[in-house]
Length: 289
Image (cartoon, rainbow, N blue to C red):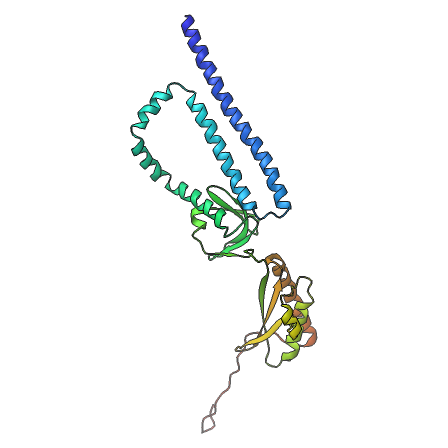
């Protein structure tokens, strides 16, 4: 009877010890994550360029701590030791099976590591894809990348997929962006006045960025270039090159400038034509059309 009680107490003590190890592991991960998260926040405020690496390491540290804690807890269970010895005999078969089962997961992890190392995009970069998807990179974990689109929705993309995509990064090495503003005027409108209005409205906008070099300024090159690009069916099409410091400023500037140009055109008598065609009738020799 006493041996049974000792056995029960021993099993209960082992169970408690395992729970304590798992609890300590969980608390340790929470504490480390909280401390590390504060470090990331301070780095973000300072504009640290390694923010992407820090975020990736945050997930990696959590995984490593959990693996260590769970492995230690399993090693405390006596009956798993002989099981482990028997499993070693089939280690080769298990390795192959695990390799096939975890191929996609391992591919995501490896792709995530290459993303952090090569840095085609980083946290807070504005990126877009060929299919029209656009957003801001919010997080890069071991398995996936989180993108926040402009409707404040989170898009989860596996790292192995996003690493094979063709990406347009608006923040890669240089945040300046040039927006092409195309406007058509009627053939009867004053061309020089139209170009002057477009140039003035863009130059006077507070978000307009002067991208000229000192040599360009010395030569008298205008801050905003406006050129005729096409004689269309019912309009003369003009194009202006408008620079802004980054993509958000460029979007706001483009919207404001289009509105101000339309109002100036209305006041100055510049016509933005609707599509129209001129039809002429040829008369036959007998006078019939």
